[in-house]
Length: 461
Image (cartoon, rainbow, N blue to C red; front, side, top):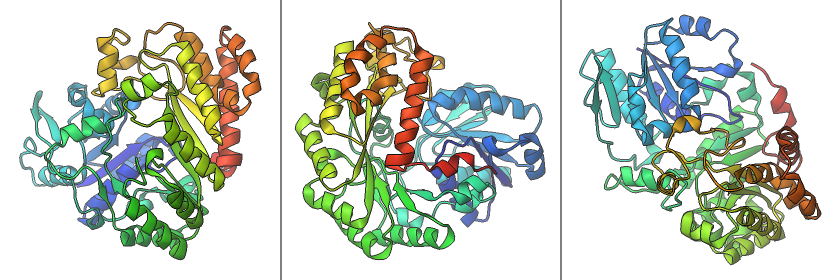
């Protein structure tokens, strides 16, 4: 039984797929991987592999693309198509789409193993936990199983599956997860819905042991020429003691630059100092909105202005770059509120402040709120997976807010331009603003944050 994972390069390693592949390979299952971006003849490669199963991990913004890709492949090949990832977890109705044979909700390791085993042994596939399965037009819906508690028992992500692609193999950075789960209830995020789905099914937050993480990092350093690590946990510093002990172990045994995504109201000076001493060079965090009502009532961030500014002052004091995230085009937001977010970022003094356009993804509390208030019609086909083009909401001044989004980072970096920007957002020069956005973001990512290096753009298969 062969399983083929297909995805499209997004400048980061597909960690979820890599964990699935490693888990299945450990149990003797033949796994393969193809990246659409780097394959000149996808059909030829699929014919060479001749998979029994093709698996896709998708977000809501990607659902249309992968749906059509799967339909096209079904016309040429015979295979069982299974979809997973956030979109299928929160919009399992995707099972009704043409060509979709099964969808996986939540953690996929054991569900996919059970599916492969059942198909190989020609057994019943309709009662596998975590899966919704379509057989002869009828859909069978199953509950999720318990969360995986012992993350150390999982094999390290299958990096070798990417080694056929020079881009991944030569990438000077590797992304690593030190845990799973987030306990917070931000209304725009999937985590609150995810935790509701898994209620009574195990601990929400699970961390790998420090020894296990260090072992993976050492393996990566032995295998690849690396200049830094990126820890991709939702909240890296969720466990204070774990974070402090990890910093000490990392400093002694790894000691190359790294970046994290902390929650700012969980840091103090002792932690920031420890992160700096361990080699932390960049943190990615989010304000989301500078307006108190939007941030804490609508978004339920429950983080005060003072907590954010104090944390940013500490990171700046210790020379750790700040990548500050924000959202514009939020439900109830006015143009004046959007400028509050801009001014709040200026006070935080981030290295780079980026803004996305809010997208009401399915089954999130904020999406439901958007529908109830009449801002969104619920049509998922209108959602933009890139976060950087257009809003799906009907808001007053939404076109001006979209233009401000493109000029946001420039305004934070050069506040003296704000009077000019207030004029520019009245003018429909969207393509020009898009160019400004891309150029400034690229400059900051490459030269300041060093999230991506110039060499990565030109690497091919």
